[in-house]
Image (cartoon, rainbow, N blue to C red; front, side):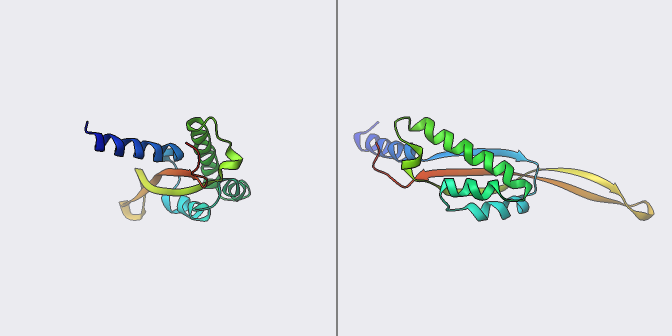
Length: 135
């Protein structure tokens, strides 16, 4: 590997050290319902996002709360020496993508059948710290 390529790789690696993520695959909630909750916490500080999710009435909020906690734990595992409260963690990005769909048939009048699509989603939460001074 060339010296310039190695320097770029080291710079990208140092940049990724601050960022931590967590994924939730095949969550049995429709992506539309999950996006309603995800849009509320996008860009918020991690602590405030956890409070919002804790007191939300939506069922998707419980799953997102666990996912944000997991992302914080992943950040903490990457940065053992840093303190979570002082780091100023915030939700940099939250993505809700459609997952697999279970297709079922429901009987309909006159010998017909209607298709039921049970949707699922994939959620990715990326957490970053405001304080970039740690190495």
